[in-house]
Length: 195
Image 1 (cartoon, rainbow, N blue to C red):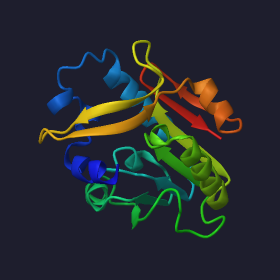
Image 2 (image 1 turned 30 degrees about the vertical axis):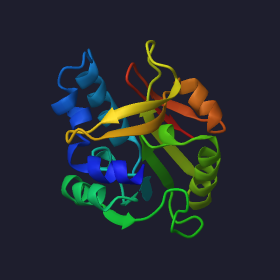
Image 3 (image 1 turned 180 degrees about the vertical axis):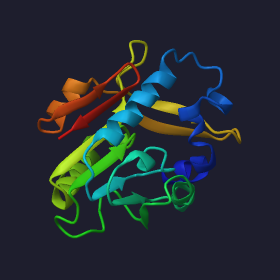
């Protein structure tokens, strides 16, 4: 997984903006929902936030307050520094957060939680709760034609193939899984839950 995201960094946002390998996908309403997702993130009160697995900073740039982006990929962090230059960035592991207890007011994570298998999910939730009292999870909504949990074969622009674990979420079920919470966005493509 680390090698995959290291290599995918320069093309990761192609998925968001619908270019490259994603140009031909039928994603009706995608742009409008992406805008709604942006408004949801920008509408949260400013907080000292740790953005775990911040990736390219595509979502990081919409978080309000003092933001620290953490990722295990140096290539992703290079992209993030360009997109969200107001944040501070740390190279580190999401399952062993390199911060003291209570260092943040909020942990946010976008399209990371859905890649964690069960044991990793429990470990991540313990770590997130250790460093902040609030957790916001942005991920992909369950799709009618896609199994809610499966291994995907993904192809990068260079033709390399990677097997990646992925879950899709019903917002209410995700809120329950996180121990209770509030659904901030429930769309066709994205869910946002605050716990």
